[in-house]
Image 1 (cartoon, rainbow, N blue to C red):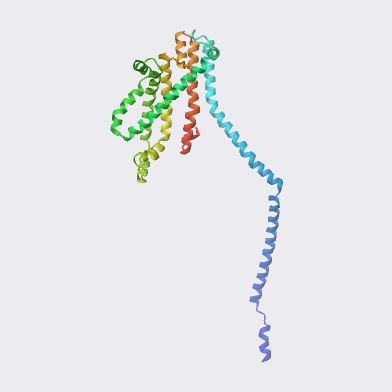
Image 2: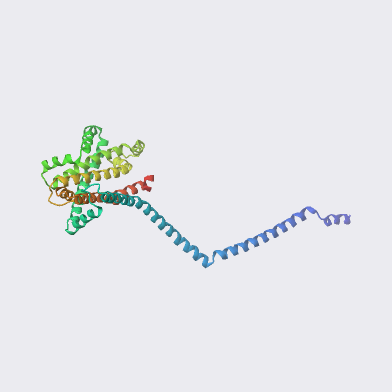
Amino acid sequence: MPATDASPPETSEPGPSEPESDIRSTARTPDRGSGSSATDRSVTGHAATDPSDEMASGLDALETPAGANAKAVSQRVLAKATPPVLAVVCVLALWQLAYSLNWSASLPSPSQVWGELADAHADGTLLPSIGHSLLRCVFGFGAAAALGIPLGVVLTRLSALRVVLGPILSSIQSLPAAGLVPIAVIALGNSEEAVYAVVLLGSVPSIAVSVAAGIDQVPPLLLRAGKSMGATGLNGTLHVLVPAALPSFVSALRQGWTFGWRALMTAELITATPLPGIGRMLSEGRDTESMGLVLASVTLILAVGVFVESVLFTPLERRVLRQRGLTGAER
């Protein structure tokens, strides 16, 4: 009996021994894997903390984007400047060709027109003429914008007023500036006031009609959303309607400037104002039958118009469109 009691403990069961060996082998296997991964991490960490590599990557991060941005900016400027430069070169080449072939006895060469501008600068009439014309148009355009924008907004809010004034404004807008000058001269005399009146009559209808047309294109959903949030009346106009129609306002101002500038040149050409202007130079060229002075004056008119367009209205329109995520901002 004692022998039979001692024999069961001496019997070893294979089940428990196998898990123990598996546990030991499993424990050893991660040690090897962890050792290799630790070694890899140490090597990788050593490579990542190499001072020369860090300095090189830092210099690449600082220099490469700046160079890429500068290259992109130069390419964009070149792409925008190339078409107008090529257009000017083509016009000058055709002009010189027409002069060389003697297509017209009264046509001067480009160099002769440049000589007229140089003579006007030498006798002190070029810069004052440009300055006076610009000041007149700036003041007249500012007053036209202050009158035309509110008038356009009011026309969209009061349908009865729009029915009455809409056709009148459209008729005045289509009227040539040469038809407005005699009215202004008879009413105000041959004075600066007559010139400003012509600029206002040329710009205000254009701005008001364009502003009203731009507001008409505002989605009604925006107006309903503003009303649901309490933006009604003047509050809705200032915070919902005007911001939504702001791109159209910029286009209206651009068109108003164009109409005002042309009206100003017509008024300076016809009226006898005490201060000189580009229109006065054009009138002198007509009176003296100097085609060179006439073309020089026309060149100044075109140059001022292009300058104002490229410096003021094009960047303003691009900024407004970019703020709204419109594709026109990339132009």
